[in-house]
Length: 122
Length: 249
Image (cartoon, rainbow over all chains, first blue to last red; front, side, top):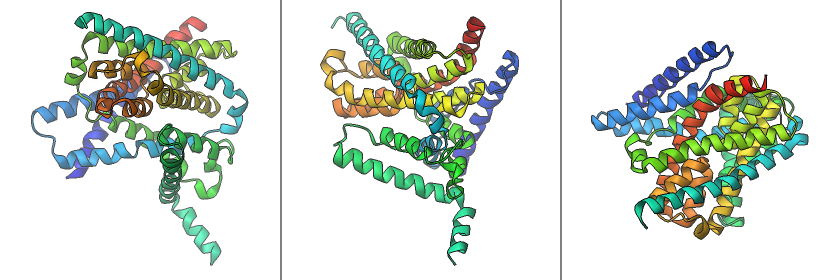
């Protein structure tokens, strides 16, 4: 039953969101703090455990991967419903921070990979 | 009769949004593969096209046009967050352990570092509200974490747009620049691909870049990039934002 896979996903999603809500009220913020990330983490742990116990069937996985394949289409829809006109004038901050962050990341990757090579004696 | 057909489309907003997004992807995939010869991933083009389409509407983007109101449901927080959690499927703790301490360090360095750069840029551009700064900085981590943080801390759609744009910028640079400097960066092994995915964190950018270097490395980079998204979705709103608020106020 594919719906079991989707239901497992839904259970982890809510477990994450509940934790996010609890953190939100702990910090006095109205929103959900980190719920999605916690949901991902729970989902990794649960499905990993199920695979090891041979309880993860192909059917379950098919139900889950349908939603995975909808991720990018959903992000596109999300982009299309933003208040873009209000943001155009301040677009430079997005472009600059994107460029700077990416180039500095390249530098740190170079550094981390060289550490890796040293460690392995290559 | 035309009116009844129009009414029919209005009533089926969500289904119409599937058709609309399918069409956007069809066009952008064609441009990406045939015209740009896979130099720029279709995903980045499609998100950029989504932002362009949003400019035809108002505060709620294209969803302000009645015919496309279904986009608000498809692109709303509920389905978005549900789909993000589903992307974690297939990532396993055992795999990440194989990358060793450098792999784990790269994840946290990547998220923290990108966030700090985003914060610095936002402050330099004159932003002072911690919620706005945190949202922009989260978008600098990766395009999906910007909206997640933005919704959590109550940032405006304008700021969320900028955070998506910063993330899309990153996808573009990562996918175009990495193949050009592959020797200099030194991505040769599975482990180095994991470091790359862990620091960069944008799954679509990292996958596109690795595909043009060596397709066998894609799953390794995508794995750490997926972990990056999860860790960023936790840390940005629940740890970095409160700290930022505490420092700035």
